[in-house]
Every structure is written in C-alpha cells, then in structure tokens.
Image (cartoon, rainbow, N blue to C red; front, side, top):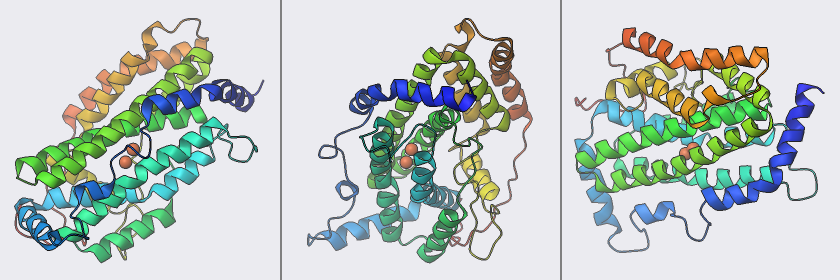
Length: 331
Ligand SMILES: [Fe+2]
Ligand SMILES: [Fe+2]
C-alpha cells in the first residue's frame, strides 16, 4: 500500500475518536472566554477611563516588548492561512457529505484561535503605542504570502508541526503575560495568560493525535517525526515582512527581539523536543523497521546535539527599528 493510502486509512480509523478529543480538549463556545471579557466595555460610560488606564499602563513597556507583542499578534491574525492549510491535509475531508470529525476539529480549533488575534489586535489599537496601519499592512502581506511549513498534505507531519507550535506559542504568550503583569499591566497580563491556556489545550490535543497515530502506524509516525525535525520546525510567521520590504525580511529581526527578551529562545526549542520524545516514549516503541530505528536514533540524540549548538549561538544585539513601533527610548 502506498504511504498516502496508509495515512488515509489511519486517519479514517481514528476519525470516530475525534469528537471525544474535542470534548476533552476544547471548551464549549457558550462557556469559553471572549475578547470583550478582557477589554474596556464600549457600551459603558467607564469606557474612556478604562482606555485611559490601558494607555497609561502601557507606557511602562519597552521597545522589544512591543515588537514581540506585535509580531505575536500578526502571527495570530494570519489564521486564514492555517485553517486553509489544515483543511487540505490528507484525511481532513470537508466534502464527504457526512460530518467528518477531522474537519469539525479544524473548524472548532480555528474558532477558538480566532479570538487570540481579535483580543490582541484590539488591545494594541487602544494602547496607542504602535503604528496600526503598518501592522495591518504586514498582516495583509503575511496572509497573502501564505506559508510553507514543510509538511505537505501529510497528517503525520502536520500534527508534529502543530504539537510543537502550540507549545511554542503557549510559552511565548505566557512569558509576555508575565512581563506585562510585572510592569503593572494587569489587563494585558490576563489576556496573554488566558491565550496561553488555550494554546496549552491545543498542544495537548495535537500531542494526543500523534500518540494515537504512533499506536496505529509506529514506523510511519517515527519517520515523519524525524523528517520534520531534520527540516526544523519553522515558525508560522516565517514569511513576515514590513511594508515595502521583501518577503521574510522581518522574521529574523523579530526572532532576535524575542530571543533577546527571553520570550522564545533556542533553549525553548530544545526543551520542547525533549518533552515530545519523553511523552511519546519514542525510546520504547517496538517492532520498528530498520529505517524507522535509524529515525528513532536520530531523534533520541537530537536534543543534546541542539543543546550544544544553542549554547554556541550568537545573537545580534543591535536593535532594529521596525515600522510597527515608534522608538520611545526604552528597551
Ligand atoms: Fe493562538
Ligand atoms: Fe495555537
């Protein structure tokens, strides 16, 4: 049987379980938080005072912080790219006529994710600290540019990617929230922390999908995992650019900011990989083919190898001036 057919069979075999995953890892729409819960209520007379408070508090936050928050927001705002990509994955069938569990999952996941960009965008707008028009141009560029995360339409590779990426966003939103709180920005702190909570649930779900696939097709899953790690997990906003600039030109500059600020670092990448190796217990997967054994070896050794590389890594400390954020002299 071809690789593609095996994957389709595995996806179909797991499909009846997806509703259970949704119950376990997603929150019903009527119960989950909404952006408005964390923003000034524009129907109340207190609105302007609350906005004033946001604007005052936000003066305590420095340049790298704003750049990171802006890029995090833009990454969330490019959700149309992610939904259309996932809908196209082998086995995620929205056209079969019956209610396919996988396509239901993708829609429900998208619906939860959509609130992240929504709340952050409104906060940035109210803060008065950023150039919204430049941010909007970058967002439009990023959606128009799309992305290529090296997963093709392969569900195994895509679920490795999403497992990894959801944990990465959990880490970065959580740290941004902690920094905001420390500087007295309670509202922003709460916002980022609650987003981080969503990302964690999503991470746990995708991690479970991969674990289930390991149970069904250990060889295929191991090879897909190794293949993704060989290519490296690229960030969803790797095509980031500012107005008037070349595709991808802003991504590294932003990564330097996040690294310098300690919001998402090379060390985090290594830590995530270690966690995944442990959770999927790849050291104890049995009856592997020779090729999959080699892939496992590679994965087992990879965290230490990356650790050594990350310790030698040098980052550019120069502060680049982004069009999104006007300098206020604070780092
Ligand atoms: Fe998100
Ligand atoms: Fe997410």
